[in-house]
Amino acid sequence: MKITSIEIKQYLLPLEPAFKAAWDPNPRKKFASTLVYVHTDEGITGIGSGDLMTGFAGHEHLFIGQDPFAIERHSQIIDNIDFHYGRCWPLDLALWDLMGKATGQPVYKLLGGRADKILAYASSGELVEPEVRAERALGFIEQGFKAMKIRFHHKNPKDDIKVVEAVRKAVGDKLEIMVDANQGWKMPWDTERTWDLKTAHQVAKELEKLNVFWLEEPLPSHDFRGLAKLREMVGIRIAGGEMNRNWYDFREMNHLGSLDVYQPDVALSGGITQVKKIGEMVQANGAWFSPHTWTNGIGLLANLHLSAAISLCPYLEFPYDPPAWTAERRDFVQKEKFMVDSDGYLVVPQKPGLGFELDEEALDRYEINHVYVGESS
Image (cartoon, rainbow, N blue to C red):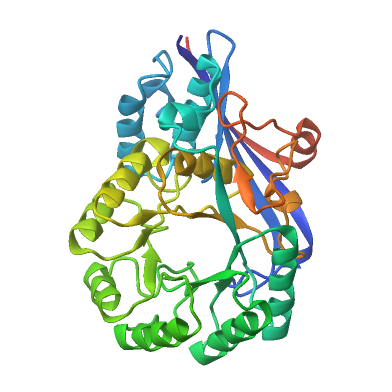
């Protein structure tokens, strides 16, 4: 089997009403998805999604004509492109989807097949009033969720803590609560000061009193030593690493003991090939691996396959904050919208590859750019 061509297409879904993401200054009125298609001479196509694939054009010849199963080679080249130009890890996901289809196996079985389901935590995206967040939390319980994550982003952390207090009062011990402080990285326009170690310590101690399961991204993602110090100072689990782009960041964090929960996203940083190695490394050191999943439904599925294969963490992130952020919006390029079962589990699809089908009607309606088609000569 040889790779014959690679296509990159982009799609844009209008959002009405808009999505008021906590990390954005203005409500989002559109949601973009990029798909990469890897075609072969045997008629099998692998599909991946995630980042924009910026920087890939001009490098297609490095893959065309190659065996798609030479995944370590391909991962190294994608890593080289990442260093020089941009993140093209959706290509790695497409290759794993292709390998699964070619072997007739779901990807998680090729990766280790530890489990076929994992509990989801409903991961919120909006800043809303405490009573609204508490009401939404009760709705999660009715849907079967056993855990949720609350997004912080108020200027005063005391206002964020009030939201956690309201949720804990409403749900009692029926939900585990995670908190995302969103201090690890910044959007291009964000010039506000991030938390320092003392602020993170003060917040963590308050969250301990509320029995919060973990505190995510409480310090900048490059502050490996500060994270390690914080972890030693508090009893609450410290999570992070969702936007660390380099495998050696995780090697250093693992060496220093920076985190209890490591969250590299296969769609953004390393693909399945490299993130599997990171997950195994940190788990060997006693930490958990539980990836970030906020891209789209295909990125979520890719992270699910890897987590089901190797993760020891009891939960996986599920981007879901209705009515603002729904499976219909997140998964608009997919025929089937992915949802938890009645017990709060994400069940891994048993179809070959990543296990999804595209919604051709939606693709025709929302395509905005056919970026590139590279074909063998």
